[in-house]
Structure formats: structure tokens, C-alpha cells
Length: 429
Image 1 (cartoon, rainbow, N blue to C red):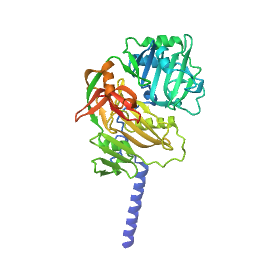
Image 2 (tube, one colour):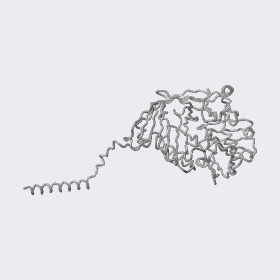
Image 3 (cartoon, rainbow, N blue to C red):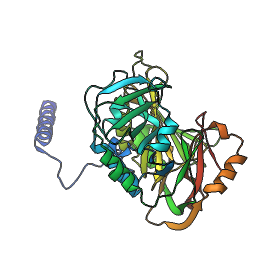
């Protein structure tokens, strides 16, 4: 009897095993019953994606009309666009390196008497980066110097010269085969000016408006990225992150490798991913810049219009930092505080992002209220500058927006912003 029971039990086990094998071999999940993944969430797109080329544009363009007359144009204005489109269509090649003093030119005299334009990239862009938006042909100089401005002017009635200034004192390049013509200067550059506000020279290469500048103040609501959104953006598996509270009130989220610090009061986030230091001192400006844009496209996107403001030439070996400055219309957003709003900062080592800082706010530009204002110019601006104690330290003076964040809205207030020699910003109150 016992043997029969053992045989029956063994038979039952064999049949169950065969049934299980059949189910494993021939059972498929039904397409209308998707697998639910509760612990792992794919990275979600929070902002818009842009290409690097969309963020490469001059800070401003100075037009010299001759007879000591000048004017200045800023991004997205019609004259600025018309002039820069012409510059982008012309070929520049045959770069001859020279010493600025050896060139033997009085640049104040050139600006005052010879019609032309200055295309300003205030912090500079390397030639191979400029090549993405301009027709820079032939062999580039081996040093790939950082270009801060391009001055195109009429040498005489038949000759146009194109000089590229660098961020190295006394070092310039001349594009000996640039195909600009005097017709370009007369019709496309000077012809775009119209009834623009006249400017006068100030403090060397700067220019001041001789009349007030019309500007608009904006007020708009905003949304804020949530902790869950940010965790899904930066961590492969948000479920394994842990939370730490700092004494200053900031929160840190980490998966034991990467870290995300959130400062709620400043609406600011800092992401860090430790990267082993590189022993190679050579920096690939363009490669790192492309990697930075790709990373931001995939981790938060862009909450407005940005321009590449800083591409520093000399940093720690193997490391490269970039600053993307936010614009609203023609003017940049400037805030003297290190953390608030208006820029994205990113640091890379050999194409790998090790640090990333930005605001967690997204302006709701569809619900904007406007108020027309004016920035002072002429004698009123002169008087303010006369009272400013750091006047000799000013390296840039330009119209900008100062972001003011309240509990419910973001205000963009027109201001005169100043960049000083040490890289800091102040406002001319």
C-alpha cells in the first residue's frame, strides 16, 4: 500500500512539472496588460531641448557710422539680426597672426572716422566654436584662440579689413581673405541703422546711449520643479535614494554616488557626480561644450532662451566650466547673487559632467503682464556714473533684467548692469 502511495505521489509531481514547463514555454504576457514598474521611473523631459548653435550669438553689435557717430544693437532686434545675418554669410579665411601694437593703428581714430561694425562676444568663443555659426574656412590657427570681437571696417573706398581680437592682450588675427565689401558696410550695416539711438564712447571700448532706452518690465507666474521630478531626472533608480537635511535648511538626495542638493528658499539646485581627475591637461572646448548641452537637454532641459556666456580659457587641468546666461527678448538676466535665477552652470571633465547648477523655477510666459519703462541715458546716465565709485573697474555696461522672485510671481526689472574686472556684477542704481 505504501509503495502505491509513493508511486502516485511521484506521478503527480511529474505531471505538475510537465504542466509548469508547458506554461513557461507557451505562455506570453498579453499586450493589453502592460507590466507595471513601480520602483523604476524613466527620466522625464522637464524643459525644451535646444542645439548649441542656437546659443551662439554676440552680446551686442556696435555700428560705427563715421564722423564720430555710433550706435549699439542687442540680440533679437531687427538691425542686430540683419547685420549678423550678413556677417554669417561671408567667408573668413587666411588668418594672419599679429601683434596689436605692431599693426600700427589708432583704434579710437578707426572707430571715429571709418564706417564699420564690431561684433562683440564679451567673454569670447574659440574659433572652432564660432565656426559652427560663421563661414570660417581653411586652416584654423593651431592655438584655437578665444575671439572676443570681430571688427569689420572700411580701410578706404575700395578695401575692407576684418580684425579678430582675442582674450590675450595684444594678440589679434586678420582674416586676409574675408569677402566683405564696402557695399556690405554702406548698405547692409549702415543701412540697417535707421533712427537708432546715438551712442558715445566711454571708458575705452564701451559706449553710452545719449538718449533714454525704452524697455519693458515683465511680471509672470512660475512653476517649480518638484523633488520627485528632479529625482527621476538625475537618478537611474529614484527608489534607492536617501534624504539628508543640512543645517542651512537645504536637502540632499543621494544614491551613494551622485548627489542632488536643493535649496528651497533660493529655488536652486546643485547636482554633483564625482569624476576621477584626468591626467591629460588638454581641454577640448567644443567637445565639452557639446557634451554640456546634451546633458542639459537630457536632464531638465531649458526654461527659456540662453546664450553661451563664458568659455574660460584656462582652468584646472582636465576641467572645463561653462555658463549659459538666460535672456528675455534682447537682454540678459543678471543677478549679483550666486544662487537665484538667470543662468545655468555646468562643469565637465573629459566630456563627463561632474557639476550642474540651475534654478528650479520655470516662468509661465503665456501669462505675462507688461509695463513700459525707460532706462536713463544721456546726461542723467553720465551723472549716475560720475557718482559711482568703481567707475574705472567697469569692463562692460549694458541694459539687463534683474529678476525679483516673490511667493507667486517672477518680475523682470530693467536695469543698467555693470561687469567689473573681477567678474562680478553690480547695478547702476
